[in-house]
Image (cartoon, rainbow, N blue to C red):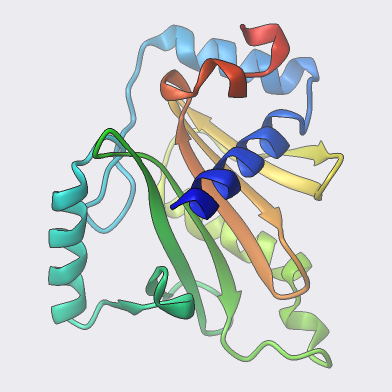
Length: 192
């Protein structure tokens, strides 16, 4: 659990440091000002969902054959149907006080190999952007520059922020969080 907490904090800090430009912060301010709550995630999951309910939903999805155990048996794996090549989304929530605070995970193509440049993460991130825009209608993703990860995409709808960024040659990380539920220490300095 300590590793997950450390990873979550590292991800949030990296995302918050991504871009202090007015477009990013302006979008956050404008979306939070709407007062709209978007807690829905995917597959019947949502931000704020009780930990017990998360496991019940995942158990039912597994029985239906829609999900299975993912990477090192530490994630839930879901086959992404809308990618140009067969791929998967491995995810797992970060819980706080027994409720989903954020959803972390990564996507990858099944047939990735070092010689298949068309399946590297720079192509996958564009493919994933389309899938997540279908899953989460509303605002479009916009590009930001991360000092750590390079190009990243952010989508903000009300309180829900979705960030896609390249992890390595094979994976695109996905972080979905509630902007109204971030720890004070993890907020950008100009947002405190």
